[in-house]
Length: 89
Image (cartoon, rainbow, N blue to C red; front, side, top):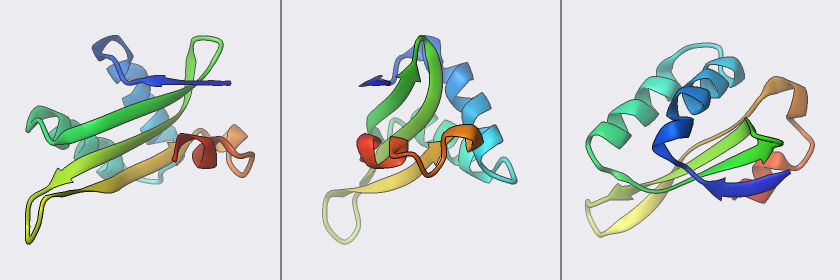
């Protein structure tokens, strides 16, 4: 497994992984909206070969002070509880 920056070419794979990791599309939709608004400060993927198996994003927060917040951490179900999320964070 290796950790790499999010790239535009990986966005479809990230969305598919988020849809697999969560029971609804809320998290995938949130990431899409944050990306569209330019609010993702850092986006990282966990890769196995060239397959996205995990994702973490840190979004800009402006109120009441400037900061970043963790939104979300996700790992494909077959790799959950194996340290991928911890490695991303």
